Image (cartoon, rainbow, N blue to C red; front, side, top):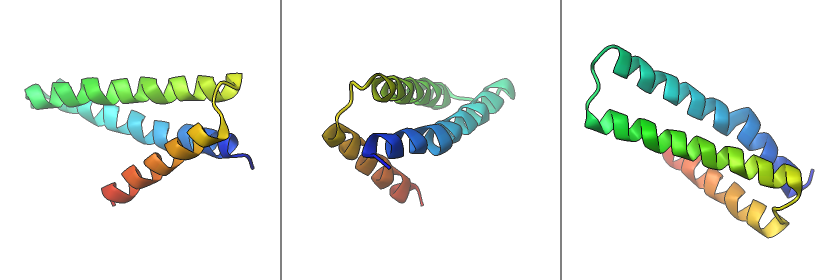
Length: 85
């Protein structure tokens, strides 16, 4: 599997699903009127992150991302996920 395909799979099958779940949790907090300014900022940040990942998928699909860039992003994602655990 090419590095771009590995990155694409990780983003589609893991990262975006986790982000969407987190966005749902934030919306539930907001709907329950238990939010504060930090929650709203977190929601905006996570939505921006989701949009960045969607843009990365478009770059992969259009061939605008090379192996080096894909590998760097893949490593960053793995580091972020390791920090969360």
